[in-house]
Length: 65
Image 1 (cartoon, helix red, strand yellow):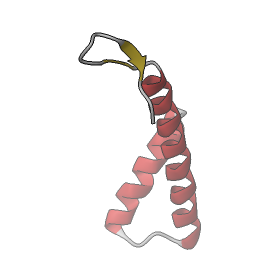
Image 2 (tube, helix red, strand yellow):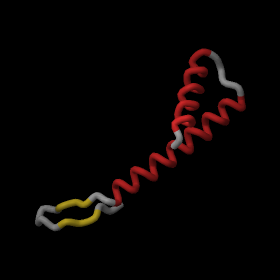
Image 3 (tube, helix red, strand yellow):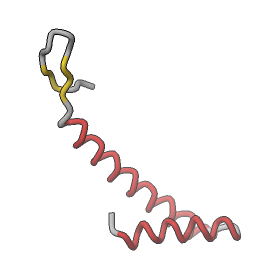
């Protein structure tokens, strides 16, 4: 995710602590958060796809769901 989008999420959070966000700001923050979480999940899945487990017999297997 682009740094400017992360900065905007932080800015909206900071504003929300000072005053109530407008409907447009709330929608923008929600969309940015969803985009951030989708990207985070994609990265976590890629990492877990590369994880192998070694069982008690020493056999190396891919991590399953």
